[in-house]
Length: 304
Image (cartoon, rainbow, N blue to C red; front, side, top):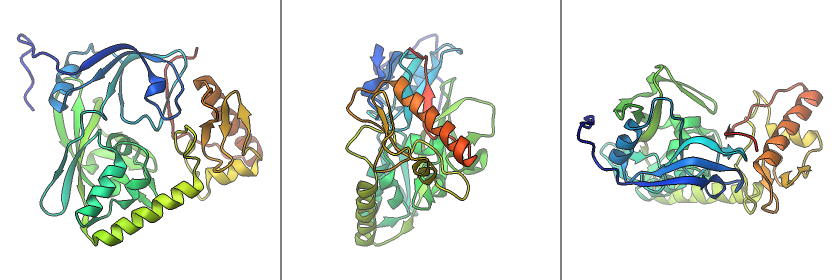
């Protein structure tokens, strides 16, 4: 992508907001405000906006906020919301599809199935966007996002876009890190799928969603799994073995349905309640089982 001529700056076409309540944008429905928030009009507008930010401005790209907690004191930087605008899906030859980062992962799963393609069904169980799935190598039921990625599109602080392959990243369980020192964000990806049977793929998605509904507390605000599974074990088993199902701090509770979920039980939990409960669970599991749980959730901002 060509850099704009900053001597004749293009007008920004997105929406800029100040003191944006992040509780509206994270699935826990708790937390403080972002100092600044921007909703780009499209990928080109996003590149223009990012290029104009000071080098020391903290930037946080957010999709559906399903893996994010913003502390009650707020976020002293700029949040960029991708979900409303980076929503393009292009069906390509050779069973490939290009998907922008703001597309909800379950949407790609459904559309791929309807196009007679298989390999993306597991994304129906990921409660976030493609950008978030790329960032943490989200997965479930034995499949992971980067297992079907052929290339990604990234954006750097200068507003330049890059096409990178999986070889440019260190990829692991719920972990992705670029091998270059440059700060870049995912704005899209090319997925390589296989020819499949549309009816069979839809049936698999239906079964996956039924199991998710049966096992997860989807009626209460939550972020999905709070902790990564330690090698050879499950975080939920360790937490339940500590007798923590149903344990609450303030308005935050360990789900009685799935012990690796923390819910905003009555909609009154603060981000501080949730973070304190995360810390209590981790300390208890370490004391009783000698296992140091690592969080999946990304926690940012200042305490109240």
